[in-house]
Length: 296
Image (cartoon, rainbow, N blue to C red; front, top):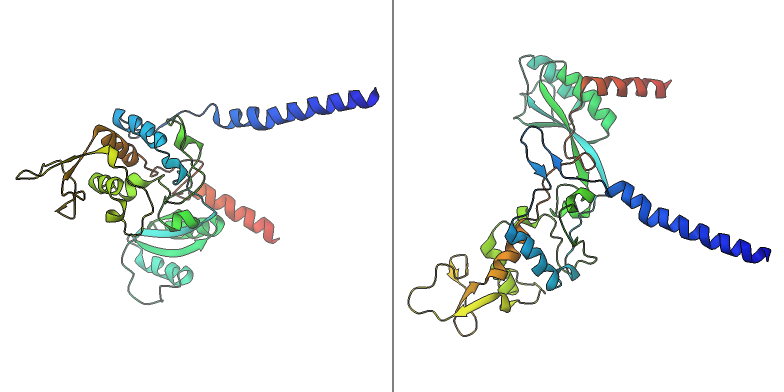
């Protein structure tokens, strides 16, 4: 009997723990997320998609595009670069500091062209101290976050993806494997709608070693009677045709799908996924105090 009660309570505890871990905790983290509004510009992030892009999401899903493409940029680490954009009037003092901190500047030489990276690949404490020293000369200097990771090095995004990036997507097309490249930022990487049409109709014409299947049902094929249609596909100025020499006209579904692809833009920095940090005097002073205490 006692063993039965223990088993029962063990099952209850396991189920309750699972609920908190898999339901309650994610709800606390992501359930209350709402689009952010930039107070300066009034723009919202993520920006609402157009009607065509919303319809294109359904076409993307229906054709199983998420089976070969992800929409999640990974980031493994980050460091800081200190960049100076204006030397100000106290150039002699700036030159002394550059000679102290920068391995790319030799004392006594002419100041480098702007903008100039004083140091790269340093931690936040070091970056803040250098910013504080140089800004004291009234030069314009800032510490910039530099994210690192294989996806970022490939140019697939300027930062990692976070929950806020998917607020307006239903369903979210994260994907789980990459037979093709990640598409989280494809709207910025390749904003040429005509290229995407050609890639959908004849993938290997746009990318020689592409393994993507063709989607001819998204296009009309019409004989060329005299002058080609202005809406017909072209690549590098040349008319794209099928095996019978017919011109290719995108259907509404193709336009919607390309509108969705072009709406995928990972170009806004967020608090939880920053792209730029400007070190203030208060931050620098706090860092100096922490470093002095650690050295004692």
